[in-house]
Length: 476
Image 1 (cartoon, rainbow, N blue to C red):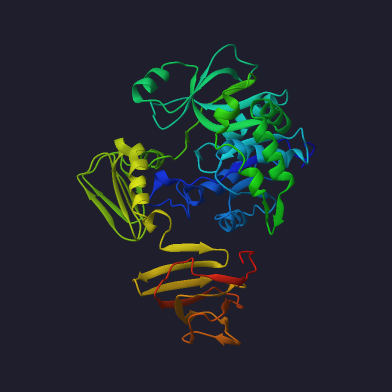
Image 2: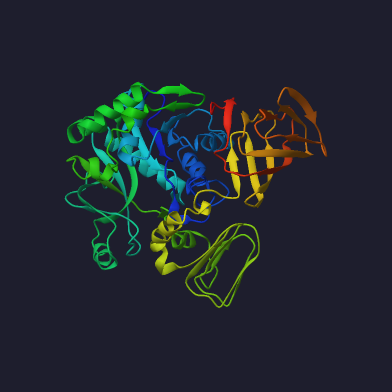
């Protein structure tokens, strides 16, 4: 990718877990893939935000678990030209950005990178594109640019940037004095009184070469490890798999700690627009259109004599009576009720669920796969009922199970089923039984979605009881 064809390369960080928005956001389907600010998911809205003049094809970093979900969401918005780098493990933002810098610099070492999280809300796309254009110009001389949001309140869930000195040029960029980690409320109240103190938006602009040169001085081990992770990356379908051994040598550290706090050429560019990292349910409430009493919500909801109440319904009616300053989030297998003033304390509650090994923390009853999705309708220690939907032309892996048998009933579409040595075609109201240990596969040859009911029975029904022998998606 060359600067002659584009002014900058968007780098989208989509590897987060989003646990603070449980129960809607879960490790198998984190918040960047949710539609919280409109019809598009946060990831899709982020990519769309870079669709203006000057933006090249994006580089998206995500995890192995979410790779097919990422592709599907990008294709849904016709983002067909992109590079997707798979992070072998969670190593925070510094190694991820470094890997993207090596990947980009292999094509054009002077390319300007615009790094943005995939899970933020920015209401004014035009204003965002304007400030990015200014930041790209500033980055041309080797400066490292970060966007600073003018605070509207003493938020304790955000980091802060303290600037100082003279503004650099007409853009109003100011040298950074320090980065301040999420403060206590008393300190936050003092910080926002300073006109040169900003919220840290986690959006960075710099040349790939400038960043890598700075990294080589400040974090030489990470510099070398990420270079090896990219040069030894392996192409797999739509993805570039970063080398696991090299990437895992990197320290788990953010770009703020690793580079921005230590570098001497960092400028903060003020961005005066409505922005939110959607890091809590209180933040979601504030970002959603409210009525005269400060109530808002999504889904089949009713407020009665409520103030400052957020309701989110996924599968049924949710009604609140006489409530104040709370959020209620309902999914088909969990309900969260939280005081908005305690929104940042949800991490402690998540640790309780982890200790209890609750599956509600990791997966929804509906789970997405590259071939489609399935919904768990009934789960019992000895049996499970699922509704399976397979995309037209899609094919499940050739597999077997050691602990369960399965009975498939087609309710819509046409299925070609491999059942042991036999291959059969099933249409609506037809079924087949797959004994324990039998090799089997499901394929939708039709032009409409295939839907079927699967009844599992056996001593163990976990998703890890799958032995894949062949798979068109490279999961075998």
